[in-house]
Image (spheres, rainbow, N blue to C red):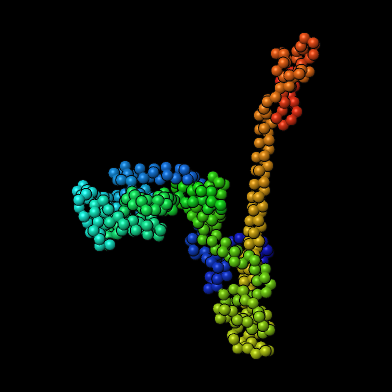
Length: 449
């Protein structure tokens, strides 16, 4: 038991148990591979600002457009469907072919020019949505061949944009999965709601981050407005140019070598129990079945857990429900049982172990917060000192006074000369912060002053 005082890990100690109990809320499930994984470091990353977001998006668009000879909105539809993963898109192209690639993404490429021809100015169509006749200039045909009036199209687009489906607005026709041309959507919506058209463009731009598993927003608070793109592995820890280090997978603070699932459970456990752990230790005892803390709210030493298990408050041993004021049926605290002692010790060790690591975790967290405040204070002081030093070095020679003369413009051309009356003149440069430099002194002496 000597090695248990520091609650460290060793080959002889095993803190994970195969019982049905849930003493660690899932933190001790060593069969779960997700708990054993720790995010690596060192993946190549790139910081994307709001200004460079459009350029980064156009780079992937141009690559797909040149490879498949597509228009921009077709390439965007493909990339959004495959979550901006160009390599996956190319793999599907090689495996299933171009036609299957387009069909799955809802891309309709018109092969016949006649099918994509505009409506005749003299023609009239009947809109299948509102069942009204519409002239050619008040109706629009999509590349899939379906044609409806502009009013119905506009209402359809407005609803989809407000519902957050700007990235993939499908055709209104029944069972048509074709994606509408973004240029047509923008044109029709901007006529009635210019602000909504801007929102539509913003959604398309941000889809590069929202739908891209290799790009994520920096989770800084307040938001710095930057995103991080990883080039290799999406399961890694990264650092934004704002200074925040975080896990790219779960967007939590950097937590290696702890896995994301274990960190999530640990954070939840600390958030739920950090304020009450001391009270629980003093006023409760662990249930011998589920190991959850149980409070005694009466005078009887037979207590019941919410799991249905009854146990003796004195020794913590599991019992039945039948009891009298003097004894509990089938139970005697005077009888020593080694198994019961092991269970009690195990429950205590679980709680003490959690308290041990929680106290150290909280201490390091508090220290980090204090160091962050100290860092900001030091950086502010350094900035002020640098500005002060810069002002002293870059002083302005904005005033020259002639000693002994009535006017600085009447001074002789030479330094340290005298006029006809024998009055001596000396040049002095006025410092910006007050005081003077004597220009008649050597340069090195002026610099020292």
